[in-house]
Length: 146
Image 1 (cartoon, rainbow, N blue to C red):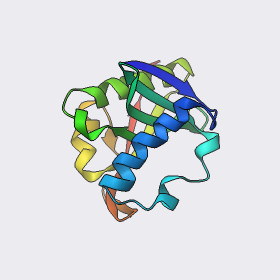
Image 2: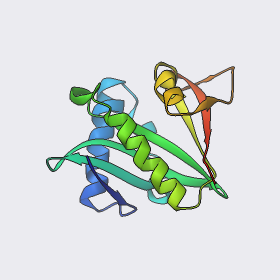
Image 3: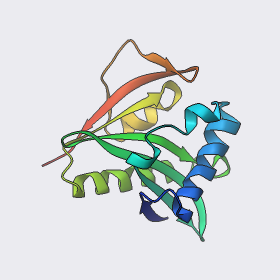
Image 4: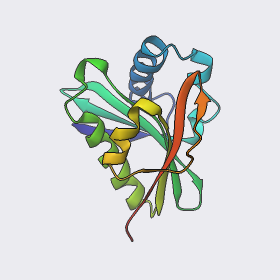
C-alpha cells in the first residue's frame, strides 16, 4: 500500500479520504454526515492508503497537545478487511507521528476495534467508556519510543 498525506481540503487525497469515510462511517455505521465532517477537517493531517491507484484506507491526525497526536477516522474499505491493511495504515501513522517528534498517540476506539488497537500496542485509558455517534468507545493511548 502506498500512502499519501495532505492538509489541502481541495486535494484528490482529501476527497479520497472522504469517500472511504462516507462508505464506512456514514453508510455502514449510520453515523450522521454532520457528525462525520466536523470543525477539525482543516486542522488535521489526512492520510490515504492506495493500492493500484485505488483509495482503500484512511485516517487523520492532529497534535492535540505538545508531542501528543490524536488519531481519528481510521477506516478501511469493507471489501478489503482482514488483509492487515488497517495495521499497515496504523504503522504509517506511527511512522509519521514519530517523524514529527511525537511522544504518544491517543485515539477513541469503537469497542469492537479495541483488540485491533491492543495488538498494535495501545492501552485503554478510561475503563468506563463513552458513547460517540451512538457507538460505544474507549479512549486508548500508545507511548512511542524515544
